[in-house]
Image 1 (cartoon, rainbow, N blue to C red):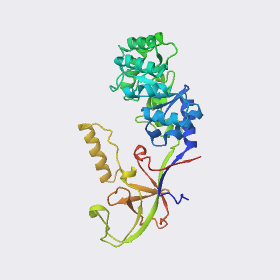
Image 2: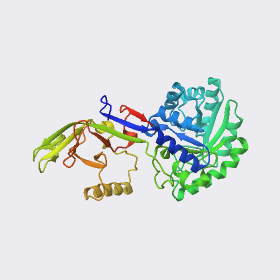
Image 3: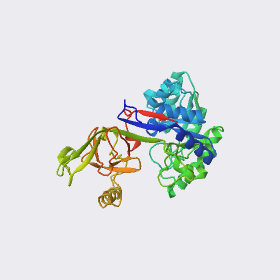
Image 4: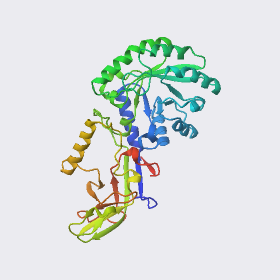
Length: 370
């Protein structure tokens, strides 16, 4: 039974997180850096960080200094890798917190030295090499020179070097790995103990040669296979979004539901309302695609498949193993679903909500279960 103080919540399974971590570590046969960026993929930054640290993660990875600060303020003593170069004004703080900082541009070596001097600590640096992602990193041909400058600089230590795959399961993945391996020896010449890492979730599965000294895994830990490749081991989804039915109404034929009156009952209908909506991440599609002819065709294909009934719309909720389709527009924090065929659904019934987990805001409470 739900907690009557809640109308919507996310349930996160600690057991699933631990099982996924163990499965990944066994499969990779190398240390694991657990990626907890973006509120641990929606599962809760602090709780997931503690779970993976206790499970034996070699490092935890975040993207922002603010995320590292939250973990340090909560007493998390794990090695923290900040994946993006910190803004200049936050470098001293990152180094003072004993975080491993990413350096992705040779021009940043001097500012990092100055920040280390100001912090009174040695800055632990992981050099990022751009082998084809194109966002951050020094070019492979420049990596040895930058590595030498870091390793010989007072106040800096070259703790690692890494790259990130654009499409680890595709042809470009192997090409990126080859470019990275070509500079590995040069980096290790200046820092023999540097951690050399490349594999994200997809590469951990599709490119065994990319596992190297450590794998950086996010998606797999939370129970999902990455794009383009399926895990050959069992994954347990750690995340489930729930909401309580707050009203059930019997509507006559011709009645409309929602803004604009766009849905009209063709016959008497039974409709249940839940106090969730697009502000809570329900029915929202992430905009993480390129504006291209190819993507326009894909989007059009998805819409057409749903309209023709060949693909299920994400605009439904689950009651147990049964689905109830959304009727009318999804509002900010309310949505109505058709429950004609679900006579046992009543006020207080709990629905499971399909949603992009990263879009389910932190205002929706995370409840941790065994």
